Image (cartoon, rainbow, N blue to C red):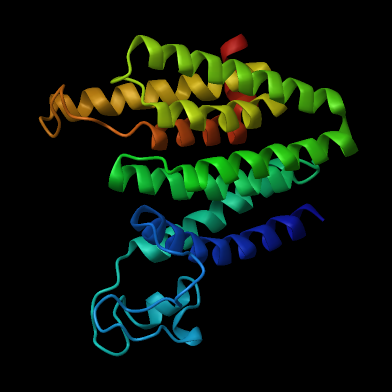
Length: 255
């Protein structure tokens, strides 16, 4: 049964990844994610259904539009494959938990927000707010079925992480943007469902990864101290690491 759940989740992740490509492109441009249908940015030709099969179509077309041969970014199949892998891994980790749907929705949101933040240095409210509501509702439903105590702990963790990020923002607005503050609640909630220790680990990993990469960029002169480095992707990565291998890391640290 676990293998079946993993396979179905990965397959659905491919399809969701294709949709996320639309979200990543259109949301920062304040365009509808529903219409019009996807088009080639070069010739404006509608993308045919058989040219819109996740990963496979890009490989068959060799990364080019069928009509005008405009190059199609490798980001598209990478987002699709990456989302499928994430959904498969989360299904492996939470296959026996009612919280799995919440984690799958969370992963989709993390992919979209991370790439948008890398492109625009923004975490759009159009994604952060619906993601927060959806994940909270799904964890609430899981709590009703599997245990209200888990949901209560998750809520408290989310509020605690939000309070820490808000304090950091008030102390240093340039160092911690308010977009990161709004994003922090859903991360704390999702991590706290597992345990408060997992919440601490996920947030710590996000800060650690952000610091290491930031120092590396400055040391290699790719960035200066005055340049902004998006923090959203590191928050997302730290969260995913803690969710997937947090118990193993915490076990090693406790020895």
